[in-house]
Image (cartoon, rainbow, N blue to C red; front, side, top):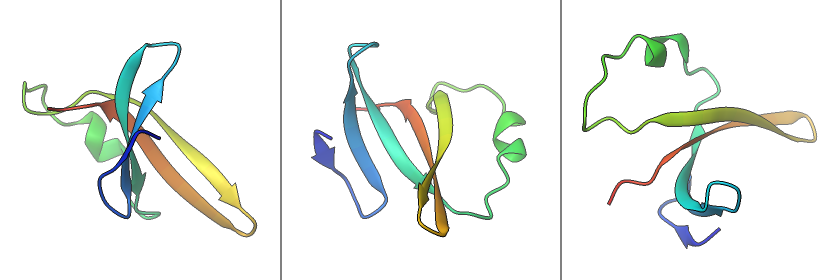
Length: 69
């Protein structure tokens, strides 16, 4: 982690991509199918990946996307 933007958003450095990416916590009930339907636009960041993190009984979902400056 290189920077904390908020309680749910961080900037991380990805070694393999040699790039800074935003890691953002996604609400558990977020419908990711709706993200796929969004039209491409220069103001919309590309989402590279979404993943789940298990913390005991709780599961947290995060997204990795391009860092916008």
